[in-house]
Image (tube, rainbow, N blue to C red):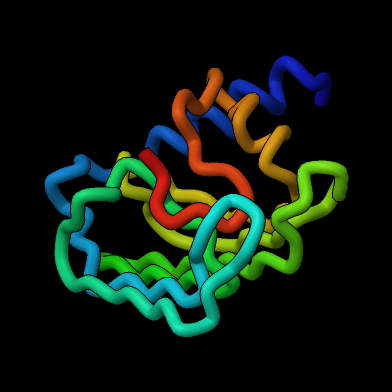
Length: 135
C-alpha cells in the first residue's frame, strides 16, 4: 500500500470516528502551578467544571494540567521548564474526542516555540513559559 492510499484510509477512519462538537462536554479541568512567564507559582491551583473561558485550548501552562471530558477524553500536561532556550519544556498526552469532535491519540514532548507554530496553523497569542491560561 502506498502512502497516498494509507493517508486516504486514515482520513476516512478519522471522519467516521468524529462527533459533532455539541456532544463534547467538559467535566473538569485542573491546573496547578501557573504563574508568570519566568516563574511558576506553587500556590496557584485552579479548577473548573463544564465549559470555561479558556475552552479554545486543550492545555494551559501550569506544572500540571488535567482535563476530562465526555463522551471520553483524558488529557495530561506536565511542564518542567519555562525557559525558551530549553528545546523540550513539557509533555502532553491525551486520548479521546477533542473539543472539535475529532478522535485523537497523542503523545508529544515539545516547547513553546514549536507549539506556537501549531499543527494546522499558527497559535496566535499563545501563553508562553509558566503564564496562566491560553488566550
